[in-house]
Amino acid sequence: MSFKQIIFNIKEMFFFKRYFFDDYKPKRCIYCESSSLNEEIVDKIDGLLVEKQIKCSKCNEIVGYWSYGYWLP
Image: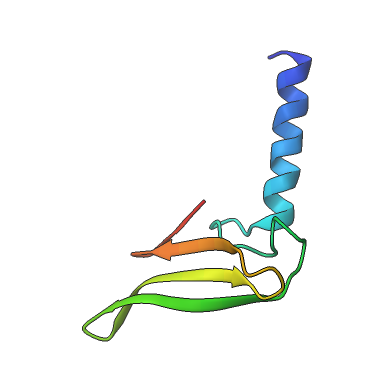
């Protein structure tokens, strides 16, 4: 593994840990750094939640999407 690849992997790990939990749920907005996030239900089937999104309350960008039990990066 080259030095550039090692540096890239370290930067990627720090980016991931700063903005996301281990299951890919967002901690904060990647656009404006705000940690004030709002969950919004997108879809329910027979009263069960199947899709939701997380938006930043400051810049109104979508920072995470949960669908059928998994966070989509």
